[in-house]
Structures are given as C-alpha cells and as structure tokens.
Length: 236
Length: 228
Image 1 (cartoon, helix red, strand yellow):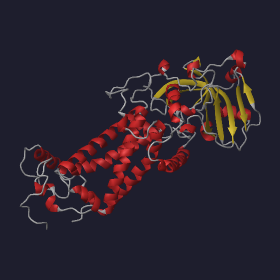
Image 2 (cartoon, each protein chain N blue to C red; image 1 turned 30 degrees about the vertical axis):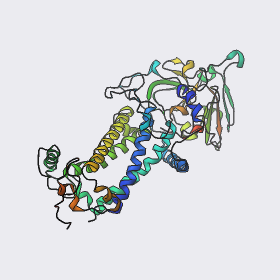
Image 3 (cartoon, each protein chain N blue to C red; image 1 turned 120 degrees about the vertical axis):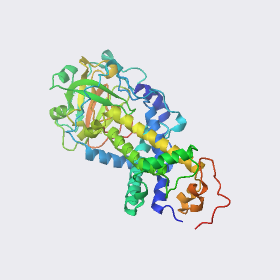
Image 4 (cartoon, rainbow over the protein chains, first blue to last red; image 1 turned 60 degrees about the vertical axis):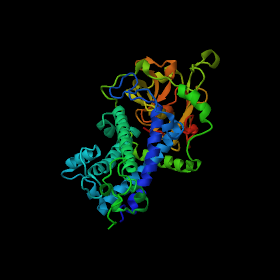
C-alpha cells in the first residue's frame, strides 16, 4: 500500500540534509560566543554559559564558513518547508496530523503501552497519537526557528519583530531553544523508527508500506516484536 | 577582532568555507541574494534603540584589533593625527581631532552587534558621516565608502546607503570620554546597521568610491554587506 506521496518523501530527505547543516553550522556560529549574556551582564536561563559545543557536532569549519552555510541553507529549509506544508494542506494529509479531540487521551494510552502499563497496542490509523503530535509540532517549531532566526539576522532593520521576541538576546535564546526542540524531536523520531518501525524506512524511500508489518499489527514496543508475527494474517 | 583576529587570520587565509568545495559557487550565490534582500529591507528610518533594561557594557566592552599590539597613533613619528575625507568629493578634507569635534555633534546609546553573536551597549558621540559627506560635497557617482585605519591594513568598505544612515557616526567619544586606545582612538566608525567588523577603528581615511573595495574580514570569507 502506498504510504507517502513522492512530495512528502522528497521533502523529508531534503529536510534531513538541510536541518543537519543548519544545526551543525548554527552550533559552530554559537561557539564563537557560546553564551547569551549581553556584555557586562549575566544571563538567567542558560546553565552552560561560555562552554562551547564539541567541534565534532559542528559544521562549517570556522565562523565565516558556518555563517555562509547557514545563510545559504536557510533558504533550502524554508522553501522545502513551504513545499511540504502547502502539499499536505492541498492534498489532505494535514487531516491526519492536526490534533483532534481525544488526542491527549490517545497519546497517554500510547505512553502506557510503551511503558508496558498496557498490553495491547492502541488502535490507530496511519499514525499513532504520539506521532501525530510530533509531526504536527515539528513544522510549528520549525516556524519558530525561522522567525527567531530572521529576528537575530536583522535586529535593527526588523526591530519590531526582534522587540516582540524580547530583544536580540532573548530572540537568540528562543532560536537556540527551537533548535534544541527540533533536535530532541528528531532524536526521538529516529529512535522510534529503528526500535519500533524500521519498516517505515523503505516506505519513506519507495512510498510502499506493508500494513501487516505495522507496529499495531506486530504489537511492537521499542525493541519488542521487531520481527513480524509468524502467524500474522496475510496482507490484505 | 584582535583575539580571534590574530589567531584567526593565520589559519583562515587558507580556507573560507569548509564542506564540499563544489558548494562554493552556491554559497556565493546565496550571499549575493541575501545582500539583495538586505538592501531591499534597509531603511534610514529604522533606528537601533537598546532595551531600557540593558546595562552599559562599560569596561566589559571587548577591544578587538588585528595588529600584534594595540594600535596607538605615534605622534612623534607620524605627526599629528588627521582624518582624511577623499575620493569622489568636491572638497577633500583633512581634519584634526579638534576640527572634527567642532562639527555638529550627534550621539546615541547604541547596541553593538558582533558577528560572534554577542551584543554590548555603549553611548557613542561623534559626527554623522552624512554631515561629513555634506561638508566634503560627495559626488553622485559615489556608491561606496571605504573606511581605512592605522591598525595594519584593516579597512572595510560599505554601501553608501548604510554609510548615510543617521546612526552611522565618526565616533570620538564613548560613554562620556574621548576614545581610548582599546576602543579605537582617536576616532572610529560606528553604526548599529553593520556588524562590528565593518566598523573600522583607528580611523585614518574615509574614501568615497564608485565601486566596492572589499575589506579586511570580507576578503577573508566573512560576508561583505554584513547589514544588521
């Protein structure tokens, strides 16, 4: 069965590359001043002031190189994001991602299942409640990353925007936090893909997915029931 | 950018952007497009106003330069310091510090935006560059301005629109005192509409040009426009 439209598959992988470059180059830029405090002040809300990010997690080699990459790749990220969001809006996929009534209860049931407080995989459609929340949040946090990024790119010419975010120092902090959230969501996503539904990887490449191998069909938790059930009914 | 500068320049000369070499034309293309966006956004009416709650940086204000030692004007060797305004002007100027200080004064409390990501607040007092341009009679073909210094070969050229912004000043005083050597004495360019490295300290010459003339950091891989 076809699971992902070509547009979704292409934008997914473009996003992987663009986001990796944006995060790596962003961390390299951050390392030029790995703190948030204005000079002569202290900053309340970052416990690792003046401790740089390990070089291995950065991209671009040095500050100017990282900036050149960051300010080029940002357009790939933005255009790719717009293509994806426009597509899922026009094509209807957004309906599966927008939270609906009962999402919190459904998400809690999924949590209970993963924590083995519940025996059977909750019934789901294309995505479970936790996935729906994550995939809905991702473009929204991406939007926050873009808006806060614009605010610290041109804080004088776009002063009203920067001031709305609390000024340059805070806008830079929100930009960093948005990045952290995107990284956390991505890490959770990758962990779940490999530990619960590795069959979704070919689906994101070819588009095809076997529903009889879905986590629900396998009653799969992280690292549990990774292989298909032997007595599974044939694919319909 | 002394600290970063001295260390930076030694190994940076060899490389500008890391990553696939073939990406270089694309990165340059993006930089050109971003400069276009920057020019479209630019307004002389967009002014920098630091947050009321922001403290002045005072002595915490970093002091960057590229020479091996902090540049100071050696009057016995070079004669009295003068600021030259030349290039595409009707009346080239050569101003002493007191002549500069007798021109109409402008002052603002301003944020400083460093390319490294930090900001610092200071009150800058000096003469608007637009005032100097008026006195010297800048010719219409002058589209760029080069700010040159006695900090080795440090200079940075700007687009004329940014240079004529009302907050672009030839600064000779900071936080109520004449500039000291750390902050670019006797005079420097300062404007919040450009990143710190575009704001040449230890100023000697202001040259109006028909074409851009690169700059110390912009020739080493940092973006030339660097508008804020």
